[in-house]
Image 1 (tube, rainbow, N blue to C red):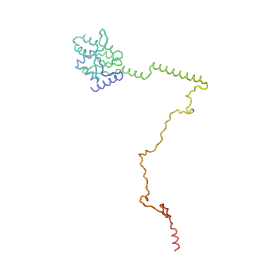
Image 2: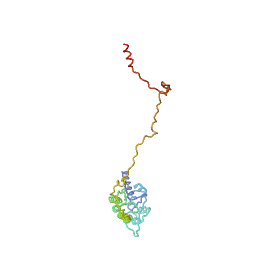
Image 3: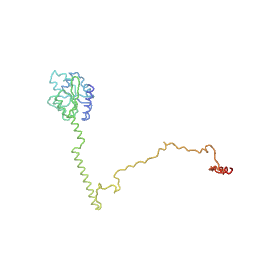
Image 4: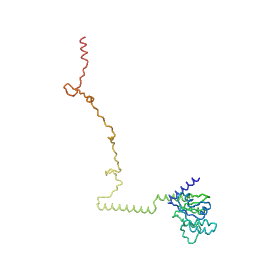
Length: 280
């Protein structure tokens, strides 16, 4: 069960890192209810517990309004107040102290420019921050910490923003349209100037002019390599056959004593047969 939970948390962290640019060490903004939950369930040190939840290094923050609220609660929240004082203070710019949930909502704003993870046990505050596109939420349940998966609104926001990136904005479209009109106007002025300079030379439309008439190839024709012979280094050399008579050292001589061989005449046995019949 713990392995599955960590797997879901890693998937959520990857979603916010890729889509909204969250980087390590992650900044976690804690309110008084979350700090009290950590102390009540012995989830200390807090930075180690949160780093195990997010599988990354973290830095904890709170606001001066949260500190003032914990201090106002008195002795019942003195331990939480002392623990909150050790955290870094996020700037909230409130001259008059407001409630913790209102202060955190204003620090986050509409875009969460500081890339805060918000850790709170306040259900109403979590529902309110789910409507902000890039705010990951952390809450505790007994002795375990959970990272909420992206809400439906956050997923739809990411999907719509990706679709917008695929199309041109109105400003880009107007700039492109202006550029094309200036180019077309320049081409038409060049054609008119050529026609005035030489009346016999008139502009013509090259789109309807076939490439065969002007001896220009419309398509690029690639030259195919012809089949080549085998590699001479990889071919076995031919053996030269020697004359068997020369190899044995014998020479066949003709009647004239030259080394040239003569063709022998074959004698048929017809004359012998006639002699035998005469003797009979």
